[in-house]
Picture: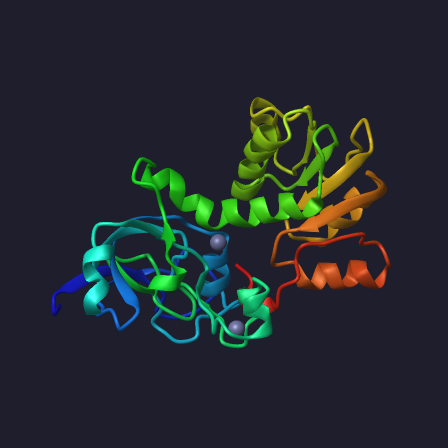
Amino acid sequence: MSANMRTMQIDETARLSGAYSGLKLGHVPVPEPGLGEVLIKVDACGVCHTEVGEIENRTPPSRLPMIPGHQVVGRVVSAPGNYSNDQVGRQVGVAWIYSACGGCGYCKRGYENLCHRFVACGRDHAGGYAEYMTAPLEFVHEIPPSLETNQVAPLLCAGAVGYRSLKLTGLRNGEALGLTGFGASGRLVMLMAHHLLPLSPVFVFARSEGERTIALELGAVWAGNTTDRPPQKLDAVIDSTPAWLPVVSVLAALAPGAAWSSMPSVKREVTKARSAGWITRDTCGKKNPSKP
Ligand SMILES: [Zn+2]
Ligand SMILES: [Zn+2]
């Protein structure tokens, strides 16, 4: 296919400011899928704070220009080889893990993000801020066609890391859950907790009064500022801030044996907390370069 497509791409990395908005409109050729890949017509792509990290060079793109976007939902429009008929028309999603080797010890244990050949979607390979993208068939996810594309897209990052964190806390129905920070992932975790653990009260710590209000509207039994104390001890806390003050402050609210679970991007804070002997459990476990 030789036609061009529109993209929003990162041409240079720099501090975001009034003069620099980070993304520029681009026109590039529609990519050609290689063997084992599919070409996807993008219908929706979520926006993630990690893209600010890419633009401001905290997790820089492997090359420039780079098309970001790792919460992609679309339809397969072509695939080379003799499996094309099986693929065309499928609604699929692409997430942060664009590809990995598939054969190393990390990949075999389901830790593809730690693979030495890990490739991040939208950072190391062109992502979903475009009309089309290619992706390896084995790393695209089936999306039921009955689901709305713009509702599914955030599940591919904020939803996935939130679900992973919730599962790794080992929280049982009825035990108290705390959430430090209440952005996209925190809100999705709250909804998941209500569904999976309907008897578990949820306590939210957030700096913003607006976020605390939303937390209460979504069913939190308590919402306080970062350093406030909840009315009871918590059996698990999931942190998504990621910053030092919320991590340290919430430790005082943990019940004995509680789980503290962190979404990615907190390597520095987790290291500090580990060295202080405070962490009972964390779910970070990721190399910094591969954080979503
Ligand atoms: Zn993300
Ligand atoms: Zn591997």
